[in-house]
Amino acid sequence: MTATVRPLEPSDRTAWQPLWEAYQRFYEVVIPAETTDLTWNRFHDSNEPMHVLGAFDEDGRLVGIVHAIFHRSCWLPQWTCYLQDLYVETSQRGLGTGAALIDAVADLARANGAGRLYWMTHETNATARRLYDRIAERSGFIQYRKAL
Image (tube, rainbow, N blue to C red; front, side):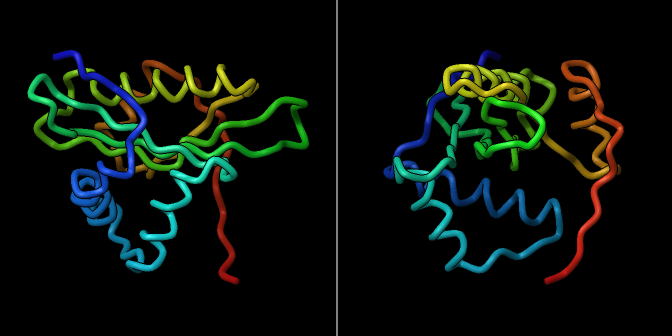
């Protein structure tokens, strides 16, 4: 299967929402509805450095989503693109949908003059890590968080 990837439009919210909720269940987090609404609106605000893309199957059904955020870096003169969230329906995994979404973000990053694309995943996410190890280089960095 070759997924068709494109930016999501405001009218795609109904199709995006279940995938966003499945992503949260996978990572065992609950993001408040107000934050989800704010995030969706930011995706469609040209003044925000946030983007949402979706992968559609041959029937036109949304089967995967990816969120990307552009930011500055102290290490590079160009923009940096952070692929924050990537989710593909369970039935679509292993069919190239995740790779297609990552490639689309890489194209978006290049088109916006980014010098780097990076992302993280949980160490237990073996399925995704098999893909990531095949298409990208591990940085060796370990993430720490401090509650504020």
